[in-house]
Image (tube, rainbow, N blue to C red; front, top):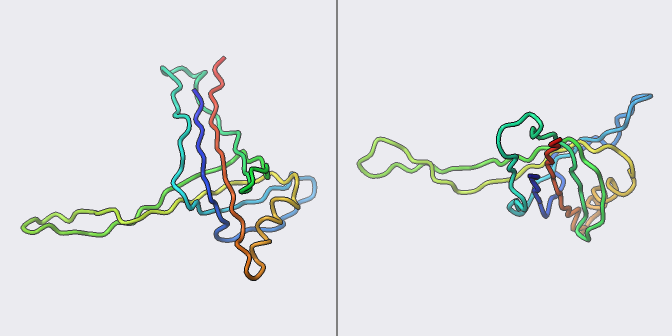
Length: 147
């Protein structure tokens, strides 16, 4: 009844706010990554017949480094696919077909900052010359909370 999605070889992409501190608030950091491998769907979602108790809630995202070390708990996340097509006009036809040529995967999430030095250090190490940069794996789990 749960859904488990694995995104491997994720590298930082776009802007990362290193610190945005408000007194009395829980510290969070927004991240954007590009996944360099197709997603793995290890468990498909199947909550059975429509029943309000089977409605999914978003929680249980986890980020790991390439060695399998836990880096961050992620409760808010999104994975999107961006497709690029090339137009093709078949001979004698007025319609233009879209031929898929490539795609990219973008993972965005909000990290609740717990162990700041570990997660942030992985990303900042990639700023050094000749560094291969961060290579992370994200596991997103959607759980049904049927009573």
